[in-house]
Length: 88
Image (cartoon, rainbow, N blue to C red):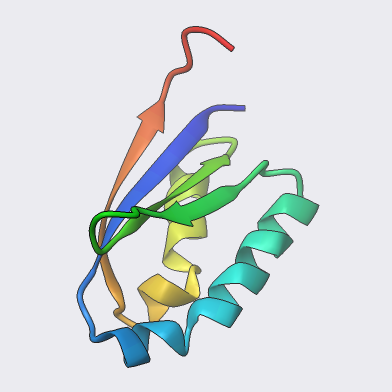
């Protein structure tokens, strides 16, 4: 399955952002359970983070990102890329 990465930057204040973190973590757990090999984290030096996951197609990847609570609640701006792994 292709690998995709959502690079995001926060666009709301921290208290607003933080209220959706539990739902985001639950969503990522759901992706893991469904076999998408998802990983999520944030940048130590700046606002924002990354979601790395597998999807069958670009369309599925876009649907996965659109369902992320951080996206649904307007907490982040993001860019979605297909990442082609050269070495593992």
